[in-house]
Image 1: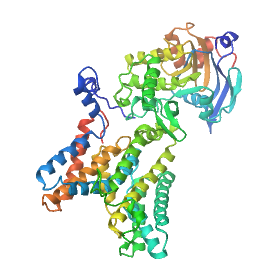
Image 2: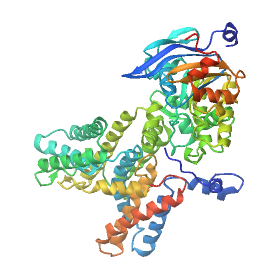
Image 3: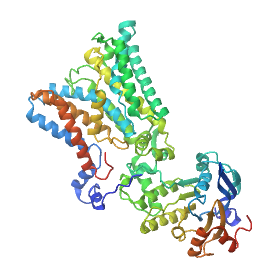
Image 4: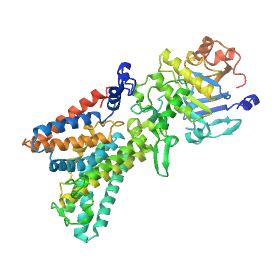
Length: 346
Length: 266
């Protein structure tokens, strides 16, 4: 049982709407929220590259940003929910690759109906999530280890299915266009439809986390498993469901990439697990669970995407990408701790 | 409720309760009774059998011998759920509180249905109602909170204890069991918690207050039961003995109780 406490004066300052007008309200809205640091960080990075990188704010560039953010963000948001509930899923990159190859593989080798093929991908993702979840809950082995194992297993099966060569689908297959095509006109002209999926997942998972009973259970399962159990929260069920949700997020990102590239190769999704956890942490998620934000993870993904694109557009060698992201992770954790002094250390 | 009290039927009564774990005799012979809206101070040194007795009362396991009467009827709890359904709420020593979560989220943890709205599977937490109800639950036991959105981690030890009591009292139990609610608290914080207990009693809830420190429970208890080595060695209303006498009884045990004239019946 933790007993961290803040000096009283500090807390008073963080309370919204007590007499001091809009400034206090703004402070109340920002301080103590997990995504505050990410929001500021995203704005700073955006402004930085707007000034220093050529063409960073053109519609083409922003659409590219949105596309990278969407694919990474969808996975990161799933990973974040699981982290808040107290678990890791290192297998998301492999799940993305393996579940998304199923469709093209079936179409190519068995002439399966494309719609059925996509459903098969989703079905595989659900099964993988169940396997991860049941293994973690059943064996009590840390999820970090379990999913490190399944990371290798699904990657290996992906290699077997592709035999090292890209598996391609017809680039006009309508069903994959649901996940990825360029919007021709309207407000989102030039953007990939994947960005809309991203926004949908963002709203859905945020609502789930912040406004539903299940969301309360997610926080409780990760914040204090024992307390959650003694209050009757079905912690094991929460975890299994979240492993499935995470796998489904990875699968959705995989389907989007099939639509964008028309192929799945053996390395698809590799190292994504680390980038996704990075986005989650940058977004304010606590490594030990119990704290974090879906919106934060989305912003974290956007930051990583901006750095990636900003470096390219400013003509900086791409070697520096990982350097920058690494720096960002450390900065984010330090900043989040400063903003949320009253909560236990990340 | 008043009628039952005048009939003299206690809300809950234990008779000759015994429990052993292998070779260890945790409870040998425990009897007690508690009326409506009464506070029973259940006192005993470490190892006297207090925890075992609570676990029996909350349905974690059944007694080997003896029985529990509820409103005069024998009851058997096969799970904590049974006990909860009949009206037994418990605040354990570890409080079962999630520090990083907002106060209102803790108050409704595991019972979110009390504050959700919507249709069928599409339900969501009505935050306005949840805030208001959490605030009311806590002010009902005499504590004012500033903001129901505040994480529990920012509350003091006494406030946390009070939130846990408020949560238990909110769902209108008939019996509230408090396990060492003051053991980790400063004197001032203890006073605050005692006030909460009093407020809960004023709502008509009967309370079993478990402690090894008579000075904590004496101000608010109506009756006392002293446990020693798995036996209830004395049961008496407040006023019969001074707190110092009670304290001595806890330490000296059965011999002393016999001298005072207890234990003849058992």
